[in-house]
Every structure is written in C-alpha cells, then in structure tokens.
Length: 232
Image 1 (cartoon, rainbow, N blue to C red):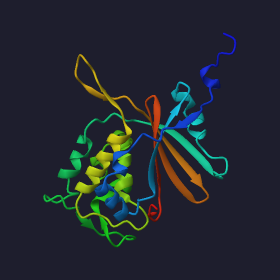
Image 2 (tube, rainbow, N blue to C red):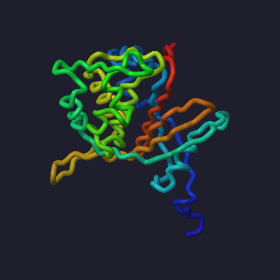
Image 3 (cartoon, rainbow, N blue to C red):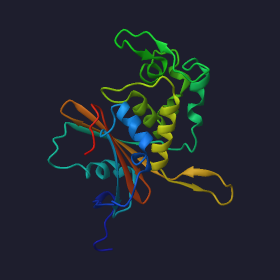
C-alpha cells in the first residue's frame, strides 16, 4: 500500500512515562547499599513508550535513536541478550563450590593487583579462576547474571560485602522491576516475555552500559562506572 513503511524503514519516536516507578530506586535499604557500593547516581532507570513494532534485526537503529546528538560517542555496540530466568536458581552452584563458607561469607583470596580480593569477584572476572566454570557460558550471558556481576563489582569506591546475600537480594529486586512475565493458562508455566538489548556506549575513555527491556514499552537501566553521585 502507498505510504506503508516496511520494517527496515521504520523510525522510532519515544515518549517518557514519568508515572512508571521502579521500586528498587524507592527502597531505602537498596539505596543505602548502592551508596556503599559506589553505584548511587551511577545506576538509573527510566521508562518510555515507542510508536512502532520492534524487530530484532533493527535493534541497532532502535537503540541508537535514544542517543543525544550532543554526546560525542566513540563507538556503540548493540546486542540482544537472553532473558529467560524466572527464579534465582542460576546462582545455586555458587553456594556449594568453595566460593562461600557455610555461613554465606565470601572466601577471601590473594591477588597480584587487588589487595582485598575474594573468590566471588575472581569467579566473575577471571577465566583462569578455579570456579569460573561454576556458572556455564550460556548462563553468563543471561540478563540476570549481567546485573549480578555489575552489582557485585560495584563502582570505583565500592565497599564490598563480606556475605553474598545483599548482592543476591538486590539483583532480584532490580531484575523484577525490569522484566515482564506471563503464565501459560494451560501448563501454568511462567516465562519471561521481555526482549532485552545490551547497549555498550563508549564516550572518550569511559564505557557505560544500557539495558533495554522491551514489552510494548521500554524499561531502561543505565549503569556507568565511577564514584557515586549523591542525589539532590
């Protein structure tokens, strides 16, 4: 039909949804932890509606349209990442492999660069860690694991936890805020219906991560490394 746009020709318009609240940013306990981890002000969430159908093959166009023209980007990468988990079971192997003591305390370890290091951060970052394969390759690509990794590693002046529980509980709160699920009426099985894009934004020598969770609208979380910024 005349005037009809094909999917590859679509352009997107976005409208903020200021009434959309994110409970993890309203929770005093979570905000105190983000402050401790040097992430307060470095992690933010917003919601937007958009006016066209989303197709996986135009994810680059979809993500880049949110960039402000005054921001000088060095490069941007966009990737659709798996988001299938509806429980915290992915993290169960961490509890029984030597990363944690029976009490839940994180086991400390020696490191050539970091004087105060532990087995959890080593497992998250270093492929030669004896515990690296505790979480499989596919599970490491999952949205919930990427959130967990950001939270555990924290910001520039992070005060790390001695126990794992605050990391797990905060990851759960953030994840639940950002995804949508549905229950199959016949099987009663719950599944994630959100599509998640990971956008790596390089500005000068700084890299920021933006995760877009799509289900009729965008729920966007932005994470940048650095010192926490106090909210006015």
